[in-house]
Image (cartoon, rainbow, N blue to C red; front, side):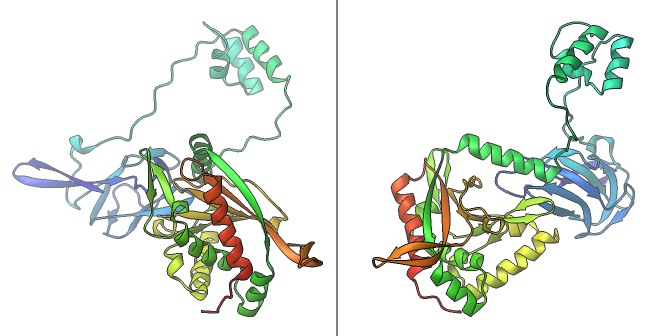
Length: 377
């Protein structure tokens, strides 16, 4: 929130703007999901005012001061840019100065579509958007123009339904598309003998994701370029190792972050991950749970997937995809043995690292999983 002052009759009126928060480095806009307060209601500092849907998380915007919610400028369902004004708070006994009302950036005004009454009637009957028809022609839309548009549309398979993306799904779609367009992805895959990890998991009770998170964090400390980002034509190496773990929820995929994972024990990683996964599935993640990730792990093994090409979670340098564990015959000391194996797929930003250093990083993860004695600490 920001405060503006206006002087009138010797008194200072303080107006507090409620702003759309920036919930991540790459966030550009958010959606107002729900207002908890109505215009004219008294609010207290620290009290939730509204719910914002963005960056795969539902976030409550709190009041930064006591007063009255004097004006709501962004309605529910409206998309607002970062730092856009959502509403205004004034003192309890203060009216809203007219000059203080700063509306949210308005969308471009649509030009009126000219169409004959018959064209409009036919468009309503078939559910045709006349703006789409206008894109295919010039001048006033006639009934014949709508018929031609309908005939072309019927040449393709009919839709069963049209599903609108929620604010969170829309943001996720934009981020994934942007990442793939702007970042030169390269993916390499390596087979891992999971015997050591399975044995440790059974003895300790830790999930494979916990083991992977801890060991990946250790490998990142040895290969710092994999723990970096590409900005302003520079490779910037992060000082912290914060591993994000993709979690599927009813609202879509979220990536809560285990901060300082390299400094944690397996037990601490396990406790942190359990808490984050539970919060994610209950829709209780907050900004701090999602911010400052430096590397991401995504696991599709539980769905029977062997290998896949994960898309980098910007602004990170790489992401590790984990496939299912399957028993298969492999050669060990010139003998054929049945071993539990899994495929790890590493997608990385080719501007930051080439294939060789990426392969060395993936090989180090393989070594840690297959050969390193693990402890319950």
